[in-house]
Image (cartoon, rainbow, N blue to C red; front, side):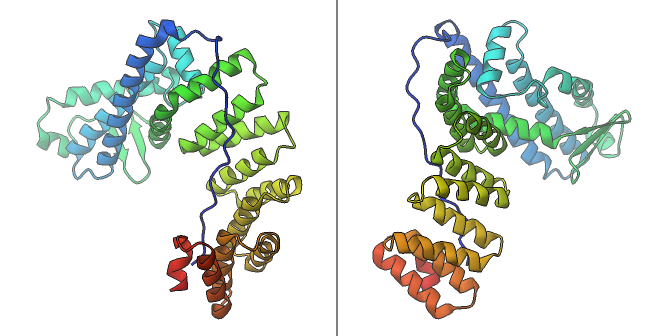
Length: 331
């Protein structure tokens, strides 16, 4: 079986920022806002999962109402009318764009639907199941909500909430980067660290955009090119990932993990001979690199060269007996 998992990012530390944006005034309010966001996002994600399994129109509308209501709650936290500065700060920290599906403008058409669902709570279940007074229809497969002749895509709303929820554990680090960038927008280290945090939060598109910005400032840093390759691999942009790994190797030929990841991506593309050549090149430089031996074994197995594949797996395990990726195939 081909190994389709690339090695992780190579982190670059960001020093703690002193001064800059004063968070003391927001400390208590920020904590409350983060708690609200967490509760709304978690509830919305749970309601969306239940929505996919709804067995009747009544339960479907109930789950949909809960989902939309909590999405609206998250929107209200991010666009607070009573504290615009705090809302703006949170949107900046979490990289929530002005045209986000959670924005008041994008959400405006859904408020009427939430009110309709609230009204239906007093309607008998059998009437709702038969179509009753409902002024909307939800297509589970298309994830499309239709109300009064207008269509609303629900999936982008879910993805926006999910991205926000996954970002919450990294708030303090993201805030540090944001404060640093507010002081110095051309701070490549802070910008890159924010890209790494976005990657950790599984926000790969945001991470890709940030690394592109960093490379405009620092075009010849092999670590940034390598990390961009990892991010592009996660996005399924495999040809671009190979180009990023090639640039990494060009800048730093001794950066062995870039060779390994390039081999993984080539194998994912079915370009096994090129992948094999890549592994052989890195093993000439680093014959004790267990991961490369395992990768070579996977490629040889895909090419039908079973005996050679077994030899490669055994070499991997001899170097690192605890390296389990080689064990199932070797057995």
